[in-house]
Image (cartoon, rainbow, N blue to C red; front, side, top):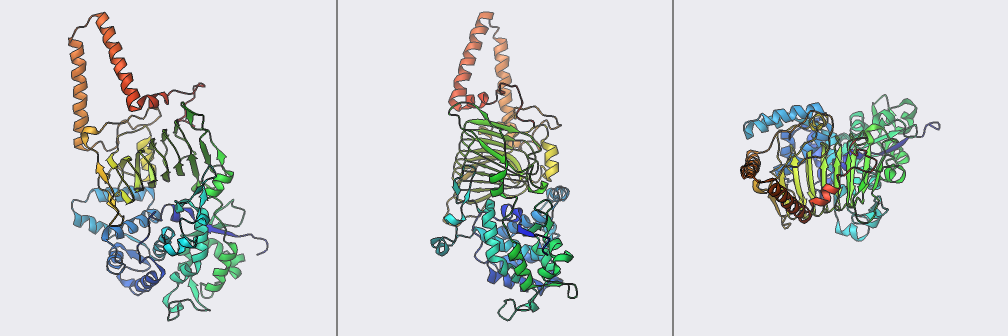
Length: 554
């Protein structure tokens, strides 16, 4: 053991992607999850254990945990997409769903799904990371506690987003690992009061489930290993408590070993801010010279842990399609009056505390989360869209799940996805996102009853297409999946008016002098419109830097 320095840490994705940024249901606590753990083990023949089918989870969630069926499906589908689906399987699922002709067919399709029961129990338990408790808030042990705050790229504390807080993940598991291990114990290993005993043994199957939350290394972060690979490695079996005879772990020894080796994730946001590579992607347009803060950890971490953090982009344009972004977890914060184009396949994206900006994204494989933003326009294809405390924001989305309105949203506008770039369909294939089904216009409210959120669907009359103003190699030449018929009709009518106007001008048979005067008048009115609408700022931002380089590449 002395020759090996094992380190274990909390995996990023279960918290960053899997934890809903909303207080969990009241019964997602240890008491009720213990009951659920006993219940599912006693009904293994009914599709509960070791794999939990959708039908049995719906029965448990709606009948015993008092969840609405929509919420039960959200948690189940979110976990299934996080753990069970490759890009190829996601495309196959989308094709199967889009071929359903009625609700009964869709329910029958859902009944074919199953998830790892023990991992799902852990997934439900960690939803507590976003639990808000008045009592613990008063003692500074709960959000928005200063102790739980993390720093953004400017060094300022951020009290609000626990999903990105790697120190928070560490503290949560450190405090809750005894309960998580108890949750994984077989019923015969528990006392009558459902607690672990001195000699309790944890099954190998349960240890594999724990790998959903933990991973580690023994060579200073050069190689990441699964939790069970480390726990079962022969030189470590004595300290991890593994017995080949019983093919199980001593709970007491395993818990002590985890506690001894547990550290903060070396590939998390804190490490990226502290030692990541700084990038100069943004182009200044005008106004005060505020330097954007952009860092990544791509050169220093294994590929599955790539992260790009950008903040304080002020009156600037950022346009990138880069290997740095491929599969990265991206956070965009504190940006103002800017245009941001990230035209690569992304793992997940959080947009936070931005205002008066336009953000165009490549396909987001998992979650696109927007919170505390003011008058931001977001365009993207994503597996899931969630909104928290946004004001006056517009979302042009293509998504196979219903957009989630968590709480505090006002003046939200939902509209169909309406743009493209040359590599978009290739990138959608890489992230497992298809054009159907598309639920952009069917938002789901998960807020409390007294939270009067305001949202609406954009009307076809106020809809305009959006052109990505960059040339790239690729085969996509139009918006994937096209526009909804009503929106396409509105676009066609507007195009007809343009053609009629062009015909009228042509038939007027103006003299050369009249043409010159007319052109000057049109240009004047056009420039006035550009200034009035703010589009002058957008056009100015598209001027190439003085060295003539194209930002979108590289």
